[in-house]
Image 1 (cartoon, one colour):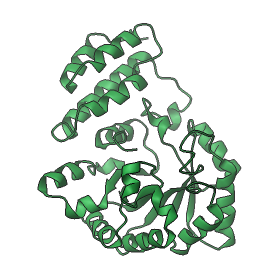
Image 2: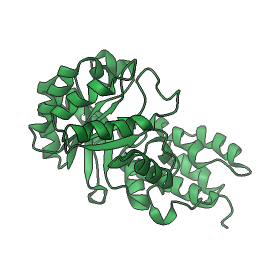
Image 3: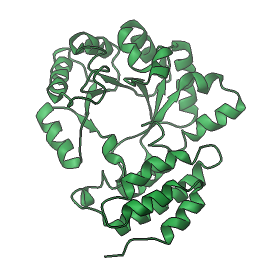
Amino acid sequence: MEDVTDAAFRRLIARHGKPHVMFTEFTSADGLVLAPRSGQEKLRKKLLYAENERPMVVQLFSSIPERMEKAAHIAVELGFDGIDINMGCPDRAVERGGCGAALMKNPALARALIRAAKSSGLPVSVKTRIGYTKDELETWLPGLLTEEPAAIALHARTRKEMSDVPARWERVKRAVKIRDSLGSKTLIIGNGDVRDITDAREKAAMSGADGIMLGRAIYGNPWLYNDLRSRYTPTPYERALVLMEHLELFDELLSDTTSFAIMRKHFKAYISGWNGAKELRIRLMETSTSAKAREVLAGALPERV
C-alpha cells in the first residue's frame, strides 16, 4: 500500500510476523528508468529491503512496455525475487497515465506489459480487480492467464466500487474455476476485506484460492501474520512500544528522503482503545519529527500489564 508498507513498516513486519511473501509499495517503472539522480534516490528508498524480508517482490506500474522491460531488469540488478504489476489502483493520477486500473480498459496493453516484465527472467504476478465499471472477470481474467503470470492477486470488487461494497468472494471462487478450466498453472490469490489470519484461512477454504493477500488489516498490527499471536490482542504498552520501534526505523531508513507526515497515518492505528489514548494521539499528531514523537511517546507510555 502506497505510503503505508514502506521500507520501515516492512522491516517492522518482518521482525514481528513475516508473511510468506512481501511486496514493496507500488513504484513507477517510468521513474526508475527516467528520473534524474535526485528522483532516483527517493524512488530507490522505496525499494530498500533486508534479507529477512525475502521473498521480496517489487510492485511496478507503467503503461509503456519498453519502460516496464527496463525497470524489470533494474529489479534483477537490485536482487528482487519477483515483479508484480499493478493493474488495479484506482488513483486518478495513476489512471491518467494509462496505468493501474485503467489497464482493465486496454487488455492488449496489459498483456504486453506482462510480457515485457517476464523478459527479466523473474516470476511476474499481477494485482488487479474483477472489472472496471462492471464485473468483467469472464473476459478479463482469461486474457491475463494467456500470458502465464506466476500469480494473479484478485481484489474481488470493481474499480468503480472502490471499497464501498463488500468484496465478492464468490468471484474469487469463480476465478479459480476459470483458471482450472484453461489448464493454467497461475496461482490465484484472493484479496478484499480479510480481517486476520483465521479469516484468511476460511476465505481460502471457501474460494479454493491458492493464497490470500491482506492489506488494510496490517495497520497498527505488525503481528498480523504471526501464527503464534494471530488470536492475541496486544496490550496498549506493547502497541506503544512497537510504534516507538516503527519511528526508529523511519529515522534509520527514510527520514532523509521521506516526509514525516506519512507516519501520522499510523498513530491512530497504534494509539487507540484505552483511557488517555486520544490525548496521546493528539500530542503525537502535533509533532513534526520522529525524535519529537518518540519523546512524547516515552513520556506517556501506558502502564505495563
